[in-house]
Image (cartoon, rainbow, N blue to C red):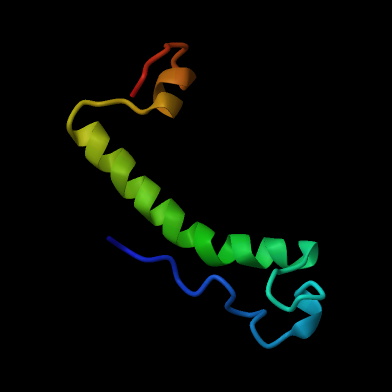
Length: 72
């Protein structure tokens, strides 16, 4: 299973990006955390979509775009 890169990359040495407990990131750090994981997620989601399409299975998003309901 692929792993998400280091989530705290870019803020790990910036105390101002952490709450008083120095464990939990601040609200200002959230966009950076999102960017750290999003690229990997998009890659994985894209692969899943391509694999599903190749097998003739449509995702919920695809079905919603076509005005259809589905549990897939």
